[in-house]
Length: 253
Image (cartoon, rainbow, N blue to C red; front, side):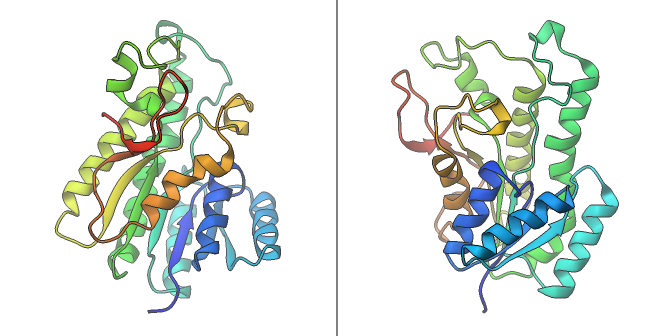
């Protein structure tokens, strides 16, 4: 088989871009999924300047027609898909952060549209292509804030952190979807896992994170390149402890 084909949604910047760059370094053809054409093409050009085999794909995870066009193009150009990284996401559309009791329902609906419904729409559209691969990998970029166990464990740094409801609950839904897709595909060579990048310094959090973008991409890259004996149906990534370290491993749901 020729080099692997990887689609990364939201790949024009941040963790998505770094994931695309790292997978390209490993010899994959990376499909730079981006909603905005100019930003996507700029990312494609920068990746190519660095030696990557990168192709821009216009892909808005909230637009069914956009998703269908992307799947049709990938099928026509490559005939299969080896890796899908569902990276596109948002913490808030209104840019208003509030406690659970003050959460905007409109904002919650908008966040779920991207983080949850968009993930399902893209995954379902790409599954026929993933089934054609020898051993495909699906990586759903989640977050430790979606781990109910981490949020409720006294002593965990997340326990004392206030958070609005829309983003954490959307990532809890991503974790459950990961488990459901893994169950459905358990008798195939496709592995489905959720990645926890950790609190990464990106535009996503106004650059308030404590981990570099390079570090934030490591869980996605690891899960995208899992060996046949690797896990499926796990939330895996950075383990945040009180000393802000902890290495990598499986997080509680």
